[in-house]
Length: 184
Image 1 (cartoon, rainbow, N blue to C red):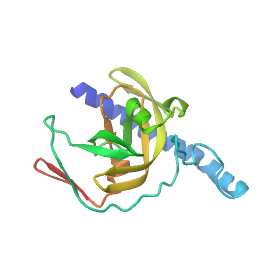
Image 2: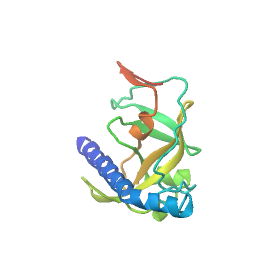
Image 3: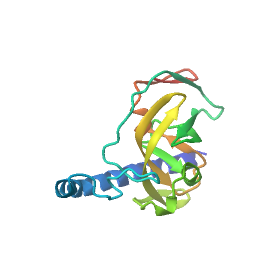
Image 4: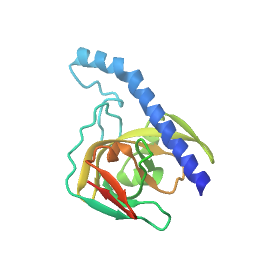
């Protein structure tokens, strides 16, 4: 079990590094495209698409309300999230830089995973796996919605999608008291 979570942590770290590399490599291209065309250049790195893609400056909606989550028997916290209109069971992972989706969950949302560019790979206990960046339109947990959430589809069987900092950091507060996590 510990090996599985360590492998998963490696996947998330690699996805974060890969996505940062993409953003830094495409920054001059964005500036050039903006000055040449007066805006969007149609490149997957700058254009929000229904089937996924990467946007350099996601817009976040303000969070409202409060959600209380009970600790599960495996010591983790889970939430049923509405991700781009699909209900996805996710493990809360404050150590994950971004939301990490399983292939199964990404396809349930309507993302054509095979059409997403591979941003690199991550080494896990099960071997190297491709990591594909995607921008989610909306992630909502019991009324707390964040729009424009950076994510990555991890092409391995990690069991459950992760609700990471690209969602959590947009909230007013995330606290744990005893066996209860509160999102505000």
